[in-house]
Length: 204
Image (tube, rainbow, N blue to C red):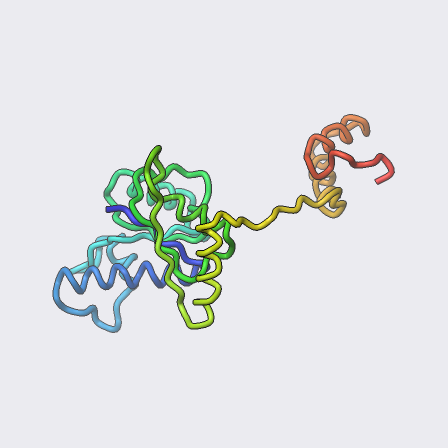
């Protein structure tokens, strides 16, 4: 009923979304779309084109406006939209309601990312998260197999928090002092509240 398809690039997400809608149109009408048609997602979205295909999928990524992304999320939650084709834009933090299945096209970029993405399905207490990984080409098969095996065993990549990255600190201080006047001790105390700078010496 509800599926999130994850792709690793915006271009692939758009192409997959358009193709899914084209296939839905071809199945519904029994005839292929003409070669010179607008992208199926746009045709279905506008409703202006005659014989517009049913929109079964919408794209969700960083290049889609915030308002459009919110509409896509609401349509999926409400059950009006069977599928969303997304990049990492749907990987974290958004309650997507009852998603039955996650499809990952190409190997996930990491074990943690793969778990996060598949975890969007069956996101209720006692439910099982279900995901399918589709390698796109032969070389991707090995990486997909390794990442999937590690996902199943919980072998998440180790996380290394950099200690006192001064390039990041310099940018933050410029931003902070551009907006407000800071006393040195107050600024240092504020910066030390962030884990990477907890042991920041005054000399730095």
